[in-house]
Length: 489
Image 1 (tube, helix red, strand yellow):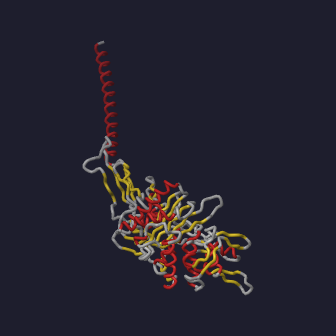
Image 2 (cartoon, rainbow, N blue to C red):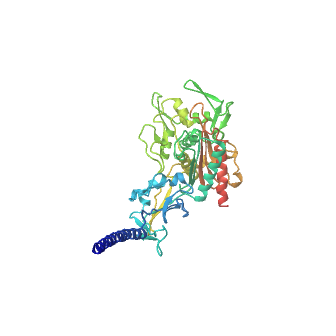
Image 3 (cartoon, rainbow, N blue to C red):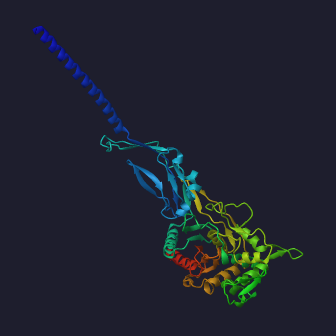
């Protein structure tokens, strides 16, 4: 009996020892796994592949695409959002789950146009180290692998940050106050063609490069070609009775009672529709049996980049839209075609940028310099690639000097006289009010250069469905011009 109890006790002891041993072994193994996992977590909790990207700057080196730090763990992730000039700079999409170069991609504006130039090539791997409490693992919490010089080339634009800010603030203020459909502005350097500011408010499109009916601002080309051909001069007279019959229809002047007997200077300053139409008719080309074939204004328009309405359109500026181009009629076959063309109506379409180019040419003594928005590319090693410029003589000195007289008179006594620039060198320009859809307000335009006595800046203001240019576009032009001049007084 005593022997049986000893055997039973030994068996129970052995069983207990086995259970305890097995449990101990299990706990040791499980703890080992936990420790391994914890160490692993301490070693590397997150990893990011970052593709460096070049910056977009204004002409003076002010960054227009500043980085905004958005943290993933402790790793700053670069996003690019323009402080000013968003219509020009554009936007960049960032996909943190995409570890290829496509993870950072230009979606619009210069970011898209120069995407391959700005993108940074080979990636940098950034790993974050943390302990089990999700705190940085001393002494190093972030490790960078494959670090290298920023391979993304910087793009220096022609924009002037301070002028761009002035323009954007003015457009925002007017847009929010007046509730227009939209407003666009372009400012360029008269002597270089460099775009100093380009801005647009309204919808998401860049209205500065969209094309609209220009209205009376197109009269600049009508009178310019007539002067070039020697058909009119400053003393040519017109008789405006307020209406005129065109192809059996009565067409009105902008002054219902008529301007009476006026000369070229007065007709241009007051934007007389009758004088513009009669001048346009003098530029017709007809066959031997007097069939209307062509109009010489179209030839001048093509020199500035206007395109035939029936041909495939090409972009006239890097940021232009492929579906919208400055256009002119493919043919002029009846007097009504001449009337519409002379007044910037019908199929004639122009952008604020195009009109800026035209007045810029006059301010630059008749030399056309194609507008540019990119000044140079700067590689990570400091190598610079200057952008080429295209220029050509459009107007002779005699004709251009006469055009300056016409534009100047607009600012002194004509439709642009309600400006405050006279004591600052004066304003030279042209107004335009363009009817486009019945029952809708007209577009308001004002384009010109300043100071008139020593041209430095060309500018166009476009107000979509704003009505009369004298009360919409001109005040914006005047305010911006004064603020720009204040910058450098």
